[in-house]
Length: 415
Image (cartoon, rainbow, N blue to C red):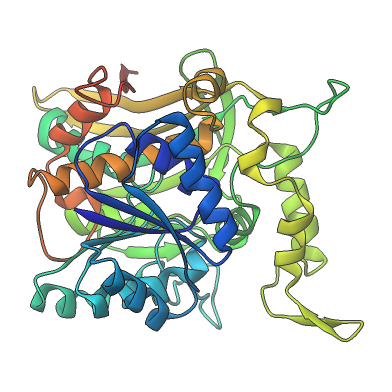
């Protein structure tokens, strides 16, 4: 396997550090618009693993499908791994197809609101552009594995596992994501600093959330709707969660039978308040505006002035939890309520990989998927979500102690 990873820093750095411990690939190309940044990622891996020679750096313009195709062909890439913001999904997706490579991403093509009824009906949904090309990928015998980060990704694997092993009938697949993370400045004061891409956070939190129901299909609601307090495991505790637009709701119903699918994120009052202010001021907009003769995107400015999520690890404490709350009828015919979850402590991820916990938790899952594809345990063609594959090998490999596995156990709580 020869992997072309588009994007360094953050998730890209963490993925490279994780992959360096594994033997399933022969070449890993780290590509970035800023060649120096890609070179730093490769140097970091080499410093951590003396003698490691499988990683190389390259420059690429992720907004150009032709550039992605050319680089993939130059290095004989068998798999193109998209590790950049979702606004670059389509050129990387199309570039991989043109190069004859398989493709993986952690977020799907962007949505567009319904022009007249944005808070009741869907317009262009997350992933619609990619699924429109499914026939072309299948005809070529190539695989585009979409949404294989943590959320989407691991939560979708949990959905497949629940359907195959735990439930005979599912009432709701409810993704619930929460944390007790705190960022502090040099004086020990709490500061506002998102633990993931602010550009992506604005996109998913201020767009109309999507819900899926049997007999109704996909529909939208107002942002931050249906608040509920969810009790997260391993000391995180109760966190208020609200509806947020997310890929799982667009993926799970395609392969897993359920009466309802939702995604709720534990944002907190402060974060919701900040997002509402950004929206009211128009600072969530992606369309460029002219400032003193210069064209700038307001959202790009907001993302640029906040700390890079990849750099806050040393100032971060606490745990993050990604999981799926499944309700319905168990295989024994009795009512069942189960929370499948994966918790990462920032202290552990920083000490072990030098990556803050949200970034590490996102990065580990595509690496696990690449290993399953390399070994032939997973295979397929077309545009597929994680739900289309057997969940058990993934969960086993993720949890198994190193060096056999990735040493990151997942949990299951009955409620």
